[in-house]
Amino acid sequence: MNLGLAGKTVVVTGAGQGQGSVEARLLVEQGCRVIAVDLDVQAPAELRGLEGPGELTYRKLDVTQQADWEQLAGQLAGETVHGLVNNAGITQRDRLAEVSIQQLHRVYEVNVAGALLGIQALRPLFARGSSIVNIGSVAGLSAHYPVAYTASKWALRGLGKVACMELGPAGIRVNSVHPGFIETPMTSGANPRFREATIAQTPLGRAGRSEEVANVVLFLLSERSSFVNGAEIPVDGGQTAHGGAQAISDALK
Image 1: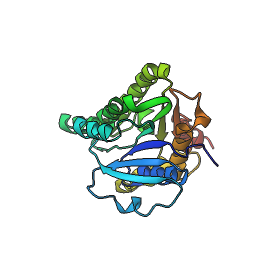
Image 2: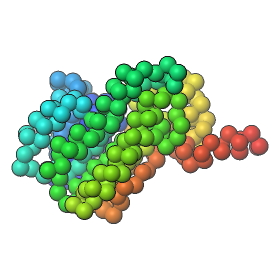
Image 3: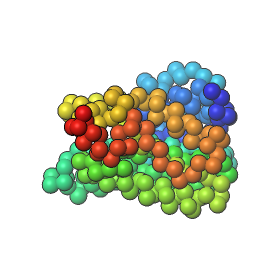
Image 4: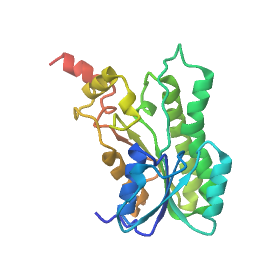
């Protein structure tokens, strides 16, 4: 499907692997000029040799560093940035009694402050019709056990709502996507019992694919979603739809 994204400039953070690299690839296939950023000095293997009518430029950028964002904004000065995908994120799986304040701060720096710094730095380059997509999580829609990660994704929701309110009058849309259990390098390190239990609570009965998240992101970046603003879209196979009632339903079968 042609989403009308050809020629648009989109910045994707955390683009070196997983969902971010897939988003970058699909955007290139749509004809976008993609500015893919991540921590590696050189472009990761997933971003090399992408084919499509668009083009990809890779830049090393630490989303927690304001100077890195200011440098990127300076390099793009005079251009229009049509989209920003705040995809960069880390997890931290300690539970309530074990997590340290230092761990909480580190997760917040990447998952929340990184998105805020990106929005602030690129704001002067956005034009009417530009779109920001924050990548949240089902952990931001429920009481997930990794407390630092969960708290950060709830905070990211708040950031997105404020940004939607403040940037809307300028014609800049801000939406959130909340993936469920997606097969990525990040989730590959999860406890197998976590994977099994999550899939058991997912009505579609399987894990998701990065492409399934990326397709929603592309829709939100496109003019096909031109009146979608402040939305929070779960891409979770129905995991959050039942609010925990599936276990009750299954027990009564």
